[in-house]
Length: 206
Image (cartoon, rainbow, N blue to C red; front, side, top):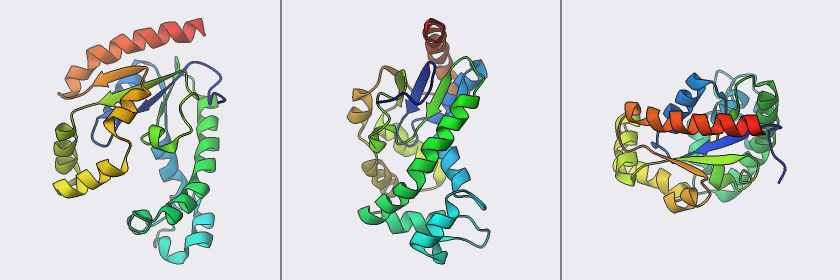
């Protein structure tokens, strides 16, 4: 599959509550350029976003809120457990996310590019498009506790979200590198520094 970047790049992923955003930010502080597909998706569905007209046409005006953004709560409820609706939304968003991701990567000025892709495994089209895949991993009980505290959700709600994501073994199966994140943010820095040094060497060699 064609690479999404013309130079050395890393696809970073992890389950909800794994700490992938924290890890990405640490790499960014060390000099990597971050391209966050979730942030791009939010931009596309914000007021005036490139996906709004198509979402309104396909799903109806009820799925656009008073600000002119996609009503994320309504859409989440609509597509959850509705494969046809989810596929329709993905058909609108994924090509736009891909083109905006490529544009951001081409404009990146860091030592190398890290694509932050929450659904890297689930999407089925990211493996092989980056030079390496980095998985942020943690114990499932740690995930649940973090998300319950952070989002104010009940345990069952968190477990339902996790069940809809790729399994932990599925993520680890595609990983070239793994960062274990069962502790605090401070515990992450030595491993991030170690991998950053490796990625710098690979980027220079590329």
